[in-house]
Every structure is written in structure tokens, then in C-alpha cells.
Length: 160
Image (cartoon, rainbow, N blue to C red):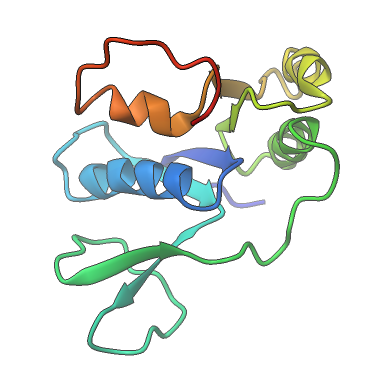
């Protein structure tokens, strides 16, 4: 297997909209060198699709500044099967075992996932000397983003 010299990260998101678009905006800033973090490649699942508002999308994604472009997400081509959030961790471990990515992250909310404990336990087991990292939000991912833009003086007991 031929490896690129760049560091590669896979981010597997529970959500199909907010999380992929959030991480895509960070990836945009890395690509345009606003954030200079070196030679890094970030893959997001599901991959955000960027469509030109004036033209039909060719289905290919261009990684560049998206002025005048509409950001959306498309359904993942290969839906990850299994019980959440364990299924995202297992998918991440499969990717680590193939050696394509240097780092894999599973991003999910607390919600009422039936296999949350198992997901954390499975993520803690190393494969090829690496572990799946978890980005876990105890309420919801949107709450995390909201806190960057407004002061909130009350607590959320659940996702609202």
C-alpha cells in the first residue's frame, strides 16, 4: 500500500448536517492556510457536498474557499450499519486496521444511545498501536456551537 506523506484524519459524524459542516469549515481554513497545521488531510463522513448556486453540482467536491457556494450534506454512499454509537467506533477501528488514516475520530451526542458504554470501551482498545478518539457532547453538538456565539445563563437538561 502506498502512503502519502501527509498526516490523515478521518472524522465519522453521527449527524448528517451540523457536525460535517462544522468540521468542513475547519478543513476549509486548513486548506486555505488560515490555520497552518502542516501537511494534513481530513476526511469527513458523511462528506459535506458543496454545490455552486448557479450551476448543477458535478458530484465532485472542490476543497477551496466557498464564496458564492451553498453548503449541504449528501447521504453517505455506504451507510454504516449497526447500533449507535458503537457502529461508528467499529467503523473507525476498521479504518485504522487498514492503515489509511493516522487518526480516527467518532463524533456523537449523548442522546439515548443503547451502546454508549460499549462504544467507549471499544474505542479504548488499540489497533495497530492507535485508538479511535471520541468527541462526545453531553447535550448536543449544536449546544457546543451555540456557546461560541451567545452567553447562555441557564442549563439545558436535554437537547432542545
